[in-house]
Length: 266
Image (cartoon, rainbow, N blue to C red; front, side, top):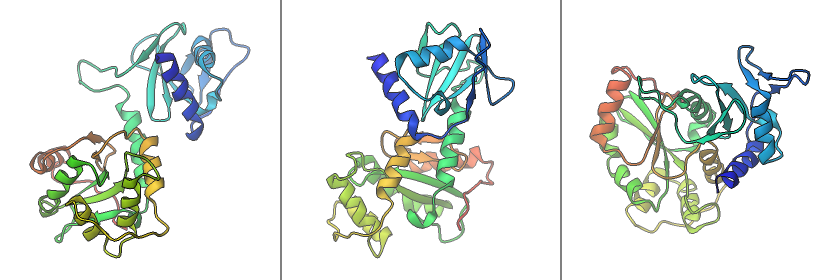
């Protein structure tokens, strides 16, 4: 099962642009990545090739703080391999001193880059009346109970200066009933009201237009979103699942020292 999962990860790597891995064919022990200080054993490269035929340049390989353990970023998934290519480690590796996942920084940058590339006009935005202190992007599904719960708290978030920007993530996939409902929201004359109505269980008028619903869903998948709600903070941190407004407000105030680092509102 794990080998199959790895093959799936390698297959999706073709959708991800990444740094080139420069292989020195004359070397018998190591190859170098584009970062001069990073040396990746040939055995690691060979281990990846063994499971599936893949363009190695589509995978980001790097060293880790653990001697003899190397990191492979494939899409939004991180796996680790031993330097001899004999062992594959799946899951998080945490630094016991900081409590942080050692891959956090890399994944955070990946999410931040993806979100920053989007146009605010393609989102359903609920902005505060008295200025924005913080911005939270939320991947949402109109048939998700906890998405409705967090939406009920948007007024409280807005009152605290938090701008909510919704991105579409119909969990049932493109072409599903949920997807069609979300298209109707994004194509409505009043997106905010349509979002509020549909999350309250009301039927909304069917509408079609050129819309970003499928693109946002695919983007979410590419950065590791697998469920809703999924909150992306303005520094790229992922907060999966529902978080009560009071706790979210407190966390943002503490995290950003009451200054905030919102995305551009242009």
